[in-house]
Length: 257
Image 1 (cartoon, one colour):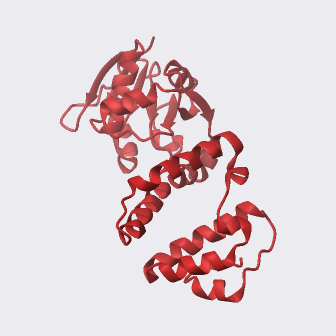
Image 2 (cartoon, rainbow, N blue to C red):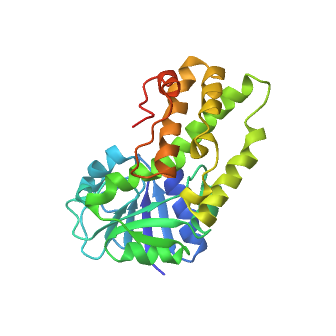
Image 3 (spheres, rainbow, N blue to C red):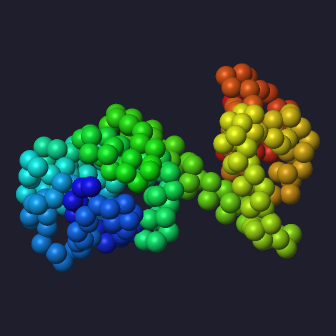
């Protein structure tokens, strides 16, 4: 087991502290803004910087480097250069939301995927949490993090649109969550293309027109963008030409590609 110190009292820092403690690691902290972090890398195998992305480089500069300590950050979008001047650098980014310390720790121990880079200790720590460690190079971090945001933030945003549209007919978002969960389960089992259903996948343009007519004007662009994504998934690389009236009804989106 490793000795670990954590800087950062936020949700990520608290979640990792609890999860690592449960797996037998010796965890010190998390330390907060009022703590002296100059010697934070002393006497431990790993120092985890669980701070906002914009603060990682500043915090790393304030810590005196130690050749015996690996300094890690938890950012999904940043590379290892922000950890200069530390010689041993690494990163771990879990593909799971960490809303509270307890829920976050439970999720970190539930076999999630953790993207790792740099020193091999990152992989050791990830696997000790029973996680699936995947290597993501610095040059690929932006694309990786974009995929992560689409998988989480954009899905939530779409469910926000479901909530708005459903409210116009007296229903709440809970009525549609079973549908959303089943669709995600189908993706896990079958893959996205085989799991795709709905009017865009069938070329049912008249239904799409009725949908657009029923939606408030400010909801149509998002709907149209998703129609375009469905068409790309149903027939990747092919030119799909919906009828002109469908294209004209979608604002700010080129559904015909």
